[in-house]
Length: 618
Ligand code: ADP
Figure (cartoon, rainbow, N blue to C red):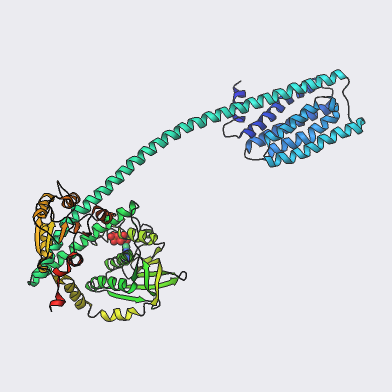
């Protein structure tokens, strides 16, 4: 009994396909039928050839069973069984067991149906066609040559044979169909159970997703707040520092102030990197293409990097293909950022030698080029193993040796994202201790057919006097371009230091400036005085800048119902500008405010008759 159960478990194990199990049913039944037949033949012992035939048949069935179960994936056993049954056994039985008046016709039908149960459609069609020809052949031969058929002894024998065949075939089909139904039910049950498990998993996933989304929203709002909180004090520090740089004559103090200025700007670019990264992460980063002059980008990058390279005694070389179109259409700000990130890294990670910036291009079609920007340095290089982590966020490489070099590991991540947003690529070739070359390929639209010319010559000539020029440009930037002694400006900010910064930045314009430290105080001023411009902070306790603006507009007997109000805020997140314009601000200035931006804004908004331009005066 135990042995039989073991056999059953082996021949009907779960990993076998349903077809394979059917093959086992047939072979198993044939084997079981064969054994008693063999025993009876041996006991009677009359027919020697009969015994040999029975023995061979039993051995063949056992061998096929073994082969079938040893190689369960093989398609040969089912094909073999249907071929043997339909093409050999049944036709032979037809002529030896009494022709169409007996059970053989039922067996042939059984063989035909079984073919479809066992085989793939392609093979089933092939065997069925052959079977059809053979069955018809048997019937025709019997009709025209009945002498080839060995008929049973009597009509009674034929009836018994038909009845037996009917019973056998019914039982076999009954078992097969029952077994199949049982298997399908079992499978359906497993599927239902899997479905339940999947549904539960799905619900868990959805919940996790909701948790992640809210965590991501919390991260965004944290970043927005952090950006505001950090930009506000930087604004004050840089603003006050600018006053020192402008007014102080002491060389030593000017040096300190210069250091504060560069550290402050470094901090600011760090905050900007984190903001850019969070915008990219949340999918809110967009490109803003404009028409731009490539030379101006090259020039800016050169000016920004030249002094840094000089301080480290690095040679800084800029070269370009003079045939690059001079005017392109793309996101100039982000292109500049990509180049600057690569250049800053090259200078940061190079102790001695040179940094080479080169511009080339490939034509894509009539309207587009691929701008190829390569930054090559002779620095510490990156090992092959580490190169694959280069563009991972917050990943710094060779951390031990780079410990003294400042960085967050965000620059290259942002650079790669911007490049990809433009449809371009960035790649690195580097050898440890030898140097690195970063190459960005940026598809850009051509705005003008003119070419950029040999700018490297001009740039190289400027190396000698760039320090002087920089200083001059800086001085020029900080110089007021106009005065407006009759202009009235109201500045609203809850942080006293910020009020002072704006006041000091505008000191030389000679404008009449009032300072309000809350929305409420602002409303008191707007009730009694008519202003030409109001500069309003956004985030203020109790009444924020937006609410204050709405109240100024609706103020009964108010004197500033249509005064232009500029948002002056540390909120630098995506969409901030649109939001302020929608709320009714005429413009938006992000902190830390540069005096040049502030003056430019006032020049646009102040009434012309109140502006006295310097060049007019001189
Ligand atoms: P980080 O702010 O740390 O410079 P980046 O994303 O710009 O962040 O660069 C990631 C890392 O890649 C750096 O920490 C540095 O180890 C390595 N790296 C980037 N540029 C260079 C370079 N030109 N030479 C050698 N290593 C570099």
